[in-house]
Image 1 (spheres, rainbow, N blue to C red):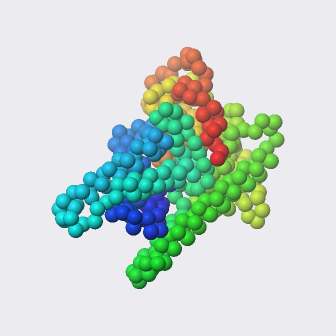
Image 2: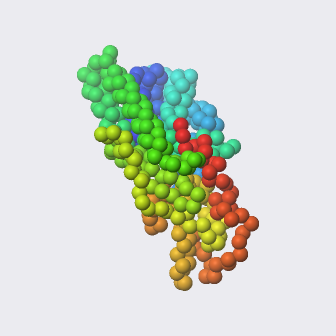
Image 3: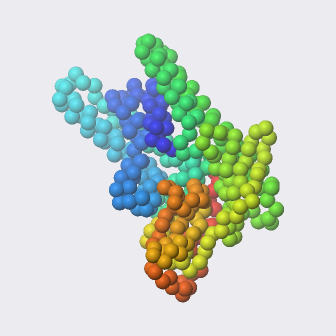
Length: 343
């Protein structure tokens, strides 16, 4: 999810009354809700390097054990420095509660990130397998609205010194947000059944049923065929209906594609991509191969979801040892995605 949603979740958790458990409670919950995104600094080494690192090491289960201790320790240290400057009259920070709040907020981050099509690598650094929830759009305005209303209501009660009730809006808001997530999960499940029922193949292909911005009753569909991808749309209202697009998106496997897949940038992109296909630019002056992830775009010039791999002027037609560009990149896309494409 986006940083605004993560921050709102941390603030809502604080407003339930958890912030009162210890000094720096609110700050700990908000920082912890965003802490896993420290991997955003990987963009300093370029977008391709960021794809290799993002939602991996800092989002995996081992990080969920380590990060709360680091955050609680840092907040405890800040508390001691503050008391040294302000004197014994300043309230002390309770390490046990700081650790508890850190754990709650840190865990909330990858759980939310799992809900969208980008996914999370839960097992990093031991295993780079991606897991996808496909439930919420990465920037979900309904989550903003639910949590934003809850926080405004909590602040309104707080300003009126209604200490006995100010926490209720935040608790209700988090409950409504959870209900919304569950409803979206049901929508994904219903959409998947509708799509699978319309397919006549003996063996069901790999699917992505993805949420769209704003409209919770609509899903986009990517169907992974043997040599191409098919696209479609599911509308849940007035009754579930699947419409399959007539277009077929060729995967574009070729000698040039295999050369691009074997490059460092190609391997990195393919480890991240979920539905990759190749387009060859045969320009004599600047030949290149574009690797595009149909999960996000079909446009090779897109800002996100596409990468350009320059090729030598004369592309060797000698076949590499593996004829599958995804295996050349160091992984089998179908095997990798079997566990990650469902809840």
